[in-house]
Length: 188
Image (cartoon, rainbow, N blue to C red; front, side):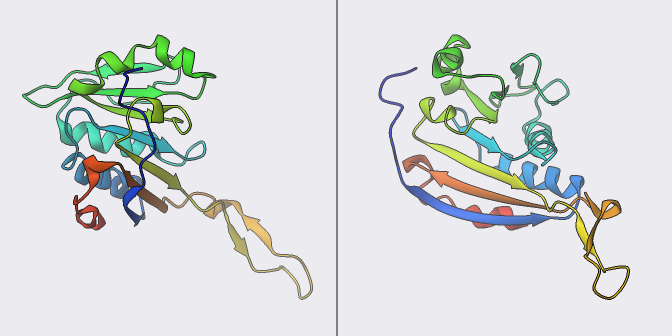
């Protein structure tokens, strides 16, 4: 990893944005793309099916990169070249990366300055790429409770409401790159 790019810096700002559908999550990604520039690192955290890739699709579409933005689980890292003058998008899935040595073997630091790097499952790993980053957590409710069938009975999980598209996206800006950047524009 590049010397001088690691370190601990406090958050510049934190914002939580609720979305109510996959399209709304993609739209948030598009607004986020408007803040990104070459050299930015974005760490995406959330459970399986939370919406990390959906948010990435919105970012990629707004950046105008080539190729379909999909989960890079099996290829680990996928480069989406810029169709115009903007930076390339490097989309990484660090789920199967067990150590910083494995991350280093991807040689991401050689292209991080010229690209926007999105790293799913990157918490505890991507920090080595840059002290300046956005840490994004995508969370969703897990089912709804239905009323008990009879008085005194336990409430049950309503599987029809298990995923109604609602998400909460929490964005934490870390490092001097983000000082003074108004994350409020992401609220829509």
